[in-house]
Image (cartoon, rainbow, N blue to C red):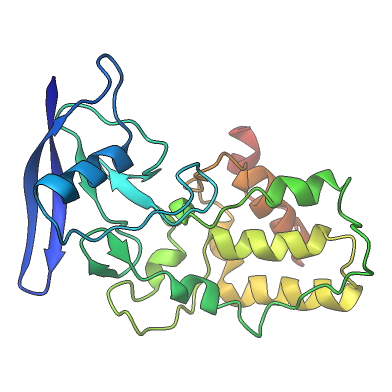
Amino acid sequence: MSMKLKLMVIREDKVELESFEYQQQVIGEKPVVLDVLLQYQENQNKDYAYRYGCRNGLCGVCTVEVNGKPKLACKCRVGEGDTITPLSTLPVLSDLVVSRQAVSKQLVEKLPVPQGTGQDNNADNTDYQRLNRCIECYACLHECPMHEKNDLTNRQADYLYGNPYSLLRIQRNLVDANATEEVKEKSLKLARDLGIEACRDCKGCRCGVGINLKKDVIRPLLFRLPNGEPDKSIEKEY
């Protein structure tokens, strides 16, 4: 059996959706995106560019969009007529490969690092461990109004405004058992500098691996601000 899908091809000289007829390997079971990409590259487009690593939903580098929604290529199953495109929230380098470094770069030398004591002081810290599930897939950038203020077409541009991933890293500092008050103060200041106030009445936060970003990241951060109480809509959704 076969199914027809569309894949975005982006090169310097063209941008187009290309049709591909995927030959199913297991009858009755839909393939994951990565299955389609591997077969497409082998049979139809030898130079097709995409990223993958662990194949088990742990590394986060394979994120693409399926019908306009961010998904892990190694986990998301696709069917007849689905369209696979690169993340629309980051600059595209080629085909499905996007430039990721500007997201983490905005934290370099700005977000302090808690100094451990040599012991795993966070082993039983459930707040910390919940946030430590993040795999940096950047699915959370989707429909983030704060992130959308950045120049998302320029590969060289620095991002002045934050995003759910950056805020998660900051909140992780605030619940880290090793963090001093100075580390926490500097981390919270960075959240303000990156525009955390924009999250006060936003409903768009979604994590690719199921972390409750509003409840475990956004709401606690907003509570720490001088004017405290976040918008009630954040609480109502959970």
